[in-house]
Image (cartoon, rainbow, N blue to C red):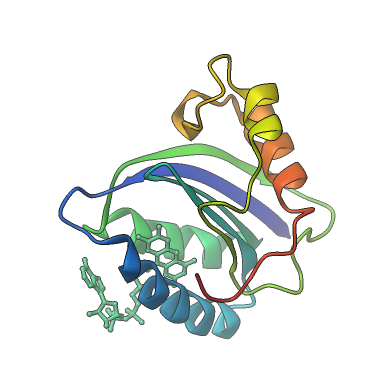
Length: 140
Ligand code: FAD
């Protein structure tokens, strides 16, 4: 049965955001092998990631991701059964700094500042679906 997992995290202080290139390359390789698709957002030092696929596969990946020291404050937002994939073209699509506009932030955050840890589960889902209307990329 198809599932979707959403979590938020923060880039670790000692990590250069250029490492995102390596994170994406490994993610795309690993996810493809497990039939996982999804979207990774990075903005203002925060990550918000959507993983969709079989529950055992995304649970196993999330357990691995949560131990990665390149990010911190890893917070599970939701894990739900879904009828279909939203990002089936992307083993991990990416939307980084400058790809999301201020109007979107203003609608979801009172102060217009992106901090995914403040999103409820339904808001995180709605935010990512709106964000995903921009065409993601495979590299930063
Ligand atoms: P490994 O051989 O263990 O590592 C692959 C590469 O990553 C190596 O070059 C290694 O040096 C480097 N690396 C691993 N951990 C660290 C670390 N702590 N610090 C510096 N370099 C490191 N993985 C997925 O499979 N799918 C995802 O969707 C996914 N999303 C991620 C999102 C975020 C925000 C972050 C931070 C990581 C994500 N990862 C994802 C990566 C995941 O945490 C693991 O690093 C990766 O899955 C390990 O893959 P591996 O066992 O095949 O490779």
